[in-house]
Image (cartoon, rainbow, N blue to C red; front, side):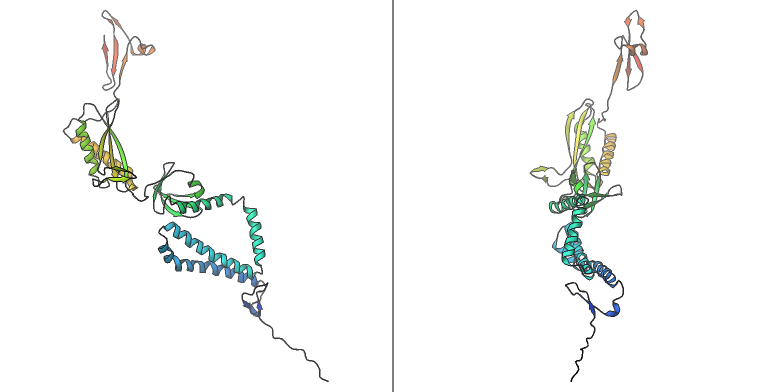
Length: 335
């Protein structure tokens, strides 16, 4: 009678189970906590791999998108996708199933929905900014509070600005969309500036207009002349022009209009133009004088208490009054 022999089985390397097999793990690597270690290694590998993938596809993506901000956003999404895949691999190494992951993500999203609402709003507004293209990286913009800054970075959550005062501003996209933004660098960088000069009514206004035009045209940042500049359906002369703006209380208001090639140093250009106008008016032989307020204060017997402070005296010729000329500061008496 034959005795039954029990077949022997060779132990197989353990594998990551739970419904899906990813990688076989030898027994000599199955130390306590090996799943956690392998999950961490998967995450680290995913992060490093995401950087390599971004470098690999960076140039092709940049060629496909003309706007730098859109290209950077696409690369961030590619990197996030690689990291997300590594997170899924780490979760499966730990034995979590797809259903568990979906349930965990759903509960986590419901709990943090209210807390993350502002961030979600910034993300949505960031997508609108990328689609509407109100500004681009490198543009010079001005906020509604008067601060000017260069756009340094645009993400789906925030916009980073580099101000002219050498400081950084990080503004959430939900906040920057609620404010007026002036873009000086959109398409055409040329900017028209206005400068008002008041001359006396006795001055030679034609000569003053000529000198003002020359003072602006000689600046290297000002457009000296050329074809008219078209803004929408309107056309403006490119050369500096001077108009009689109004007849003021103290003199004739002359308005100088000129175009600056680049909007980066507008106050500096305006200061140089003012200096040239000042020197031209002082050096020219024409009778040109800057207007400034002149006031004559007259005190007589009807001035009330102020009349007593000035002093009044009676003479045989009748009451006198004191006239103060602000140009000299000396009082004089009138009958």
